[in-house]
Image (cartoon, rainbow, N blue to C red):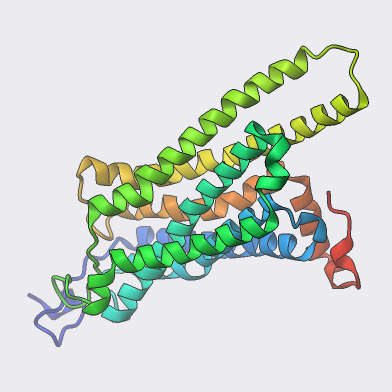
Length: 323
């Protein structure tokens, strides 16, 4: 074996290099770098918008804020390391490798759980609107978000416990970054159960939303002022449900291929184009969410305008009308 084929030529246990063609490698690095930067900037705008403007301090937006934080960390920490994983060799050591996967599992888990919380929020808003304000309070949402992050840390620790005890124990050669998890447990806890909950909740929301839309279309002309207000509120809730439904649908399209491959029993070679594409699809979801907000939410476009023009630096800018 020639020395040039090894990651670490001075070690007999070194992994072999499996380099990508130059054009292919440059395309992967450029694309991932651009998406990483774009993801960080867009989600930072969401975080600043919801955190700064007082009008946006709603229960639903707190859930979107938690989702934006996890998406921001994907662009800031996960994507750059994923670029390194496309290299033939891992140069940062076994401990950093395990910590990277530990952080990745936490962030992806929070994205999934946040989607469940968002689906539950829309379920209560559409299916039980009269009790929404009493059931879904700011305090309860804050506690739910905190428990979400704590649960995801504990869940990731359980899945990667053996790897944290002895980093690199599952590497077949030096210069590899591989961790071992209990596949069926990860599949059930992090995919089947939450995805089933999301689908069931949104199917219920869709059925109720359709029935409400039909009721509004057939509404009699003789309505009281109170009824008119109720209809307006329902329209607003239905619009929010449709928007967040798009977020959930995009989320499912990005996450399902990875777990479907695992469910089918296929083993993808780490660093192969198929593996890079599937992982990139999951990461790309973190970039798509802010774009969906920008397309559907006028308050996000207004907030971005105030942020870019530095009007948020003005005194009492947190009270600006962005709705």
